[in-house]
Length: 291
Image (cartoon, rainbow, N blue to C red; front, top):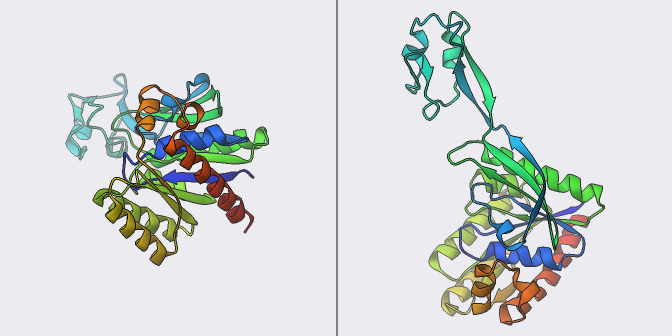
């Protein structure tokens, strides 16, 4: 089985995707999986060429067969979300609860699976990328993340690749839980700000809850040395290794705006630190995977 490395942040904007893309570039034998399915952006720096796509049906919605409908109005009266008017379903209101199907005496109201997103497999200069996009406001984010991870692992096994690099979503919600459960190792990318520290604490708690080994790196570590020191002290108390401290570097912004992978096109302080970070992370990933 390929080793699964999940890169998380606890909050957005810490540089998680920059690190994930750089790791993917440096890994000799890896598949990347963008599991931030609500707002994927890993593909923006990888110049992907789509080779496969599929529809994701993550929820159900009600439909009324006008030929069977007797227009009795029972479904409209009983719908708890007010999603039926004049015997027609209002898609934006329907929650797929199934009450209309239950009460309809004619069998005209039915629940049907609906497309709520799409999955993609793309070729990039760094290797195969599996990614997805959930339709705005759609449900089953965690289920779609699971689909992306499953596909990435299948491709890695098929091609005899060693690692799946998972770029998770920010926060600690359902998509993060779907990204972290079953992973071999978690790398938290944080920043020395109050919100960054808070997000770091939260993601450490989630990793420990699921029994997944976690280490961290502090991005833009020199912008607030005081908070950086507090984060290192917290990590020491919690038994979380700090594998690297990435300095603030304008080259990171240049790479992002140019749609480029930092370590592929630049050799500044941030790029060099991420290269060292990859060596340390890979070593720990392989160590944990053997246990």
